Image (cartoon, rainbow, N blue to C red; front, side, top):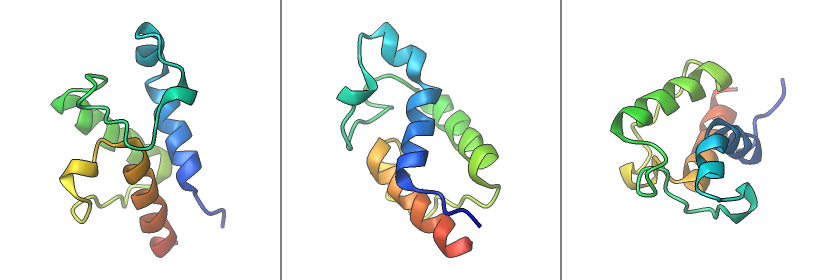
Amino acid sequence: MNRVTAEEIRGFLLDMYAEKFERRGISPAEIGDHYDLLREDIIDSLGILDMVIALAERFGDQIELANLDPEQLTQIGPLSRYLEELLRRQG
């Protein structure tokens, strides 16, 4: 079974919001580990739900985010690393 990496999850998120980044003149290379999609107005509260659904559809239906610090739910790096570890444990 192929192991999903944090880099793969990060790439998925960056691709998912590429158009919004582009409209703001932000290159994916400029997006740091703690870039917060919610605080930077890339997504809104409903967008969080859309993001979680998209992640579940792409990486597996058993994505449980209850143990992730809510502050990190919309931060690219912490979310990606959390999901990598979660999927590794499930695999």
